[in-house]
Amino acid sequence: MPMICLSDFEAYAKKHLSKTTWDFFAAGADECCTRDENLLAYKRIRFRPRILRDMSVMDTRTTLLGTEISFPVGIAPTGFHRLAWPDGEKSTARAAEAMNTCYITSTFSTCTVEEIAAVAPNGFRWFQLYIHCNRALSERLVRRVEAAGFQGLVLTADLPYTGKRRDDIRNNFQHRLTKLPGGARLLCSEYGLLPNSIDPSINWNDIYWLQSLTRLPIILKGILTKEDADLAVRHGVQGIIVSNHGGRQLDGGPATIDALIEIVDTVQDRVEVYLDGGIRTGSDVLKALALGAKCVFLGRPALWGLTYKVNEETWGLYVHSFSCSQTLGCHSVSGIGRNLVQVSKL
Ligand code: FNR
Image (cartoon, rainbow, N blue to C red; front, side, top):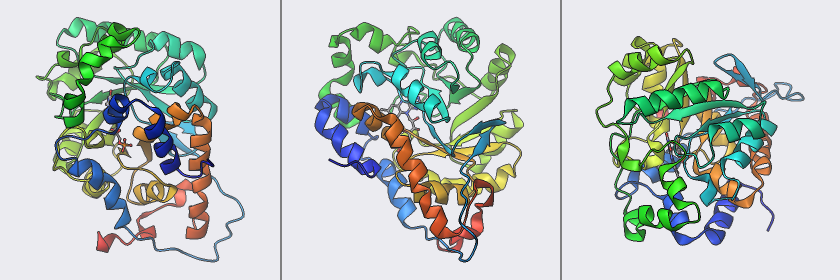
């Protein structure tokens, strides 16, 4: 089957993964309204295409906190990559390195940070942190991440407790993980972090705690309101990821693309603003950039690509899909602005 868009990879993954794994990747919280809205919201946004603008040369490069990447699409943190492919996060890291983009490695990675760094030594990586109830474990993890050469810490702040994902409960997903080969390692991840050991008491003061531990830039993931965006800036983070965890946590919250504008307007370029959730086409990328995201990140599509074991091809599709910016009249990332979309109709 020719793979020409990300839906093709989705169909492939659905066909080839076990039902339990597919359900885990696809899951949203409760009725999945927010998960689905993440995708639908893009369909409501229309472009304002411009013409006669010399589109003979295209430049998709941009920077994340000063580091250049080849195009403004990175890999969001998702756990348990060995469920998709035996090499797990090592393959993901290699693909991201080959495509010269940013890979945010999850706390629930099923390869160690040292293994990941070894297979893709020149990769640009941030590490996503869940803070453990036992703070000493988190401290040790941050030290390992720094020593392994990761260039940023992404603190995920929207998971005081895990969302209620109905299919995972029906499939007894947690229990089944322990039955897989190497299952105990999978369940605990390399860091001894059981899913219910994330500290639900984390609060804004913990940003200062994290800053006292590390000199790495801190990027806060899970922001959906201008109030929290402003607090994040005041607490000295270097970046914000507008995210609702792919609709896996709170059902009933906004689509991330709908939350983006008030956040961008509040932040006013004081820190970089990124977005994840529902990005499935090149035009989704452009709409998010037009509304002020510096870069977007992919969650589930990276897992589909990993299942097919051609992540490089998956990324190639994204680069290719930038061809839609040729017909939009925009030849570089820096030239993408709000005037390219009909904001008034949002
Ligand atoms: C996630 N996500 C996530 N986020 C995080 O901060 N740490 C994690 O370990 C995980 N794990 C995880 C597993 C799976 C299977 C999924 C689908 C998602 C959320 C992820 O980073 C991102 O916010 C969303 O996946 C983005 O939405 P899309 O691209 O999947 O629509």
